Length: 257
Ligand code: HH2
Image 1: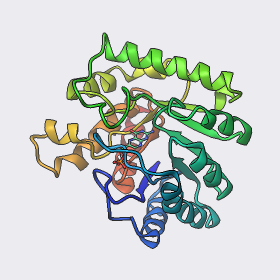
Image 2: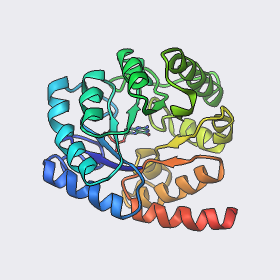
Image 3: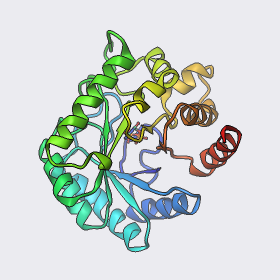
């Protein structure tokens, strides 16, 4: 899954693809680099970020989704809002990626059910504005697993077929460095739920913290963490650097086979 953020403020690529033509070109490039799905988002979820009005979010993502889908690129829409996801699906998106797991807008579950599309349900502690303020868990893996099981049941209750749900532990969303590491270490426990696991470590700040603070450590850290996630059962890898991670995953998969 290749990431294209049509935002002025995303933590790693904010502003780079805010112009529609730049976002479309980046989506094309990531698809050519081997991404099976391009995740288009119009609202940053970086720690401390506030919400973007719905009409502004639509204005950002719809032209990009429509252009990529028309060219045959499979697109997911990274949104928490039914008012964005509905038109995005009409524009050709085939997956709904909701970092709130249908907590912010329960109507998004009904929409996903009636459209018959796949959804990604992700764990986040609270909301982006406050999630990094002293996050605490009893046992981070058990807590995240219980949350994802509950959201999976909610989705199925809303009429979404279980086969249409992918689950994501939400690396960096209300987690310390140690929480992120524990989730990666014990990712097999999340995979044991039985649904495909999505992992999103790409360029996140915990990688630079571990690698010694160097910003360059984020790409190498992205590669390392995705390889470890593959070994522990992840099936979908949400990344900005598709070519590099693709090669690393191919080599890792060849060793594992
Ligand atoms: N991470 C981000 C956004 N959406 N979706 C899923 N399923 N999993 C993730 O880990 C995930 C996600 C944050 O990264 P990014 O899109 O690069 O930044 P921003 O939210 O600032 O736009």
